[in-house]
Image (cartoon, rainbow over all chains, first blue to last red; front, side, top):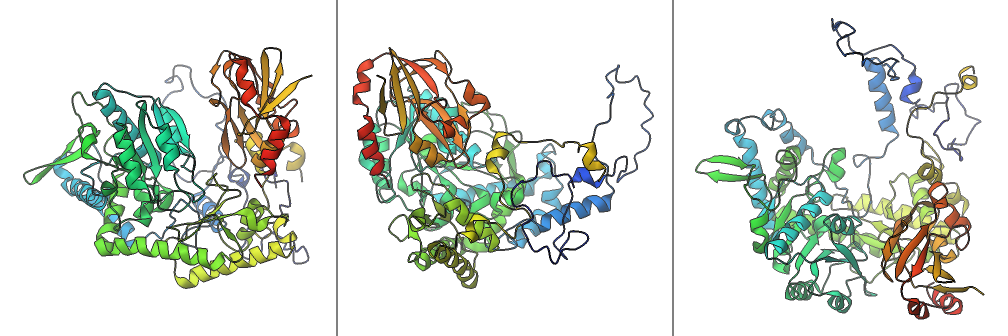
Length: 515
Length: 125
């Protein structure tokens, strides 16, 4: 097999050569070739009729050598991707403790509703009279989002969290410019998601970092010291990336507003407070909501995300189209607003498929169910934190919110790093937790179980984590240095992959082909 | 004798006449892990003390490089483009990041000496 682009480390990770098979497979653990190695050149899964075009119709711009794509029959293609999928880890296989990502279960009801023809088979260019049901989903979704956040307006169209941030900051900039006071700086806590400073920079602001207190929260005095007439906004995540509620948030909002600035909240962690706290009551002016986290389909379910932004009264006049308005019994999509300060953020109206799934999730849970989502998410995270605090080192005093943050103090002098620990967790059958983020603690391990895990599932995970922590302290470094030992590939050379990536198929050397 | 000073953000600056050579410290490269990319400032870029001068990316994280002093970039280390690992192998030698013409040499006095920086780092663990 061509090894180009494959790890050079201890790649035959299952070790045991005594039981080697002729195929290299181990029953259902199949050694899958690359698509290009399936060697189906010239084969095709579909019969296309001869196009009947003469060779000159491209004016001499015809391709003059083969395109270089392998040809596969349909069963070959299906088997290839099915086999690859069996090597993958997925939320449907087990607990996915990836902190800051809210990897919750995808209710199958969502898919049933999203697959209805009235949602799945419509097109954005259809006459609005034929898509009234879809528009009503958008109207109802907007109602739920504004109700849950206590904020009067919403832009549904942004297509992901970072896109929502961009929308929010563009609207803030438009509001400031409208009062003739564009300002130049945005304040961002040092524990923020990296997209926050990136968004501010993209909107033309310089970014000023605010330090955290030893308790893992925004240092209010340091923030006040940095406030000034040139500050456009504070961007704050609440609960923050340390998994903590910003307990001074009301005071923070008052100081920000007193300085004439706006208060942007990164709503990525809304799952921990949905149904419990309304961001509008905290003095927030704009907040994006990751539909694909709080309202299921984490990471877009492998597909698109959606990042609607809710706005306070002060920012309402600047909300970008498209949005739905009701005229009697009819709904209309407003796509063009003359002289709008912020134009549309996307073609068309946003991620319809995500709107349907999010609204399905909301309606199937109800207000009380959503409140319980937040309560159980926080309960589960605290259960993990409390169950592991005697063998690992939580970075801050509890209780935490939706995620438990540990640092690497418990690994001090063991020779095991956070990276090794995460790799060993792969051998235990888990996707690793978020590591080395947030940057404010050393060797961070950020664990977010979400509310959808049962106590039995949490206990299994805690057992695996305890076992690894105790093994590290007992000096069993071999379990870590060679991890992952049982994954389809061993420890990847991440440095070489980043420095000298090979991104295209490389023809094997003739020598290798003659094997 | 060359005079090397340090910042709390783990940059060093070595003065050679009116020009300072800037890089990150051995402690910083060790904490970052394998460096995979360095965004080096271009000649002519104006810098302020404590302001962002570039970005360094490792397998763990991307971090800003802050300028220890105010001034104008004279030269960025082009060698880091092809071989960012120089920051790991030689953080205070071939892995230097940029050279800056100081606009306010007095700022150097506010930076830490080697002994002060060593004590600062010892207090971090």
